Length: 111
Image 1 (cartoon, rainbow, N blue to C red):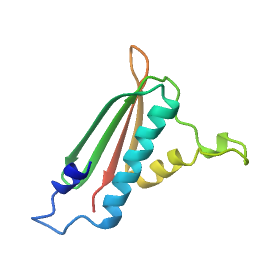
Image 2: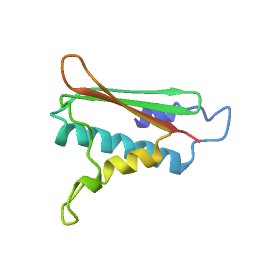
Image 3: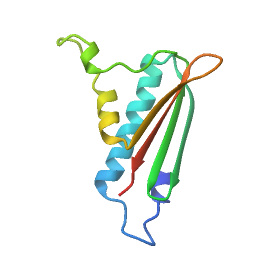
């Protein structure tokens, strides 16, 4: 991700803000961690920059959608990553895969 963000448009315009860079790393970390911990394992990952948007695609082996903190008891740990992803992202989509599993695609602003 660091290499990709290093290649983000910045030379022709203002550099990436530290906030945009931090958001991209945080969302990527949450998506990959969720795929490994709750999604039956990471089966695919891609990231690409299109203009001033970063598109992150994560595929895992589970058919289950991410859970929110609301679906946990007040005493349980976790469940806050997905709401955070949804808060930071400009667009989020979840698509089931024909052979099982799902793809989650998140679009983040880079400015």
